[in-house]
Amino acid sequence: GTGVARGYLDRPGRTAEQFVPEPDPAFPGARMYRTGDIVRRLPSGELAFVGRRDGQVKVRGQRVEVGEVEAALRGHPEVSDAVVVATRTRQSTELVGFLVPAQAGHEHPDPGPLREFVAGRLTSAMVPRRLAWLDRLPFTVSGKVDRTALAGQAARLVSDGAPVLVSAASLG
Image 1 (cartoon, rainbow, N blue to C red):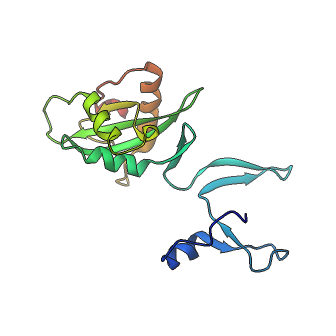
Image 2: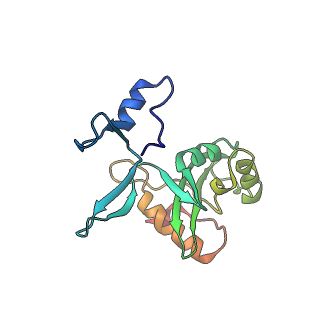
């Protein structure tokens, strides 16, 4: 729409990637912005939102980049790795952080101070409501983090309502 910027300041490559020519000949020279939303056209002609092609989710009305939340969690000295999964409840979307401790075999740190650490760096919508410590992250056969397994575990954590310690073996 007309309210969208013309591009990214001093980033012509990013501008060309995100601001693409309008294909409708009724609007010569116009550009469209690629939002990252994935939609499908219904038989009625309406568009139905399917999801996102990036790591953004909407939490309490704010767009949240889960990679940014993961980076903040990894910044804590007692965390060696972190993956954040968004799970939907009837009322809202909640973030669940899965953490691998920096020192294997040690007692897992209390999630309260870790939440405070992240809250000092991110907006309140970006702070995971649930945190779970794992001995290791689950991986797919292709070597990527198994976000599907973590999503199932996240849904269980949210429905149980409390932060718990989970082992990676229980995610299989």
